[in-house]
Length: 193
Image 1 (cartoon, helix red, strand yellow):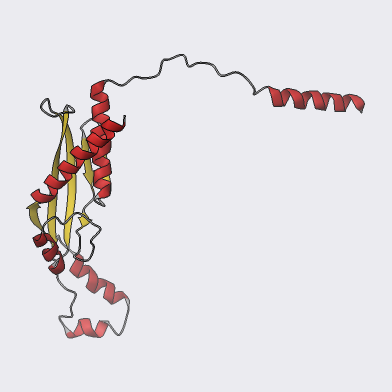
Image 2 (cartoon, helix red, strand yellow):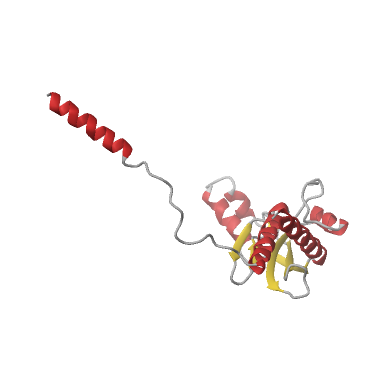
């Protein structure tokens, strides 16, 4: 019995000390980024930061193509003062009357004239919602409201068919504002390094 305890204690001590060891230096040296890679990383991170600050939800990130794309987002309403996507008063006024959607796409490309060696081309597409209002157009549709709940879903699907968004084209004022914000954020990131 005494031998069992001795073997148990020796085994526990060995098990507890096996994992202890000294730290060894890595075999491969730490990766050093070139100046171009640092500049690309800065503008890449700045693009994502700015789009997030403008409440866009990022859909696609493609480093090789230098492309960041967002999901369409419902535009700023007049009383949403914290949002930044409606640049002009006309945009805010139009948002009162119709739902406006915006989708941003930023392409990063090499530019020798830019201070960091890279530039960001911003495109913001805008659409106005033009969906017909749900309304009763016949007596049978009115009667179905009071009978079977399944008929209401059939009436709703008729309204949802088709694409009801009307393209407003590019929002150049918002594009310019996002591009200047990306430049400022890139400069801020590079000065922190």
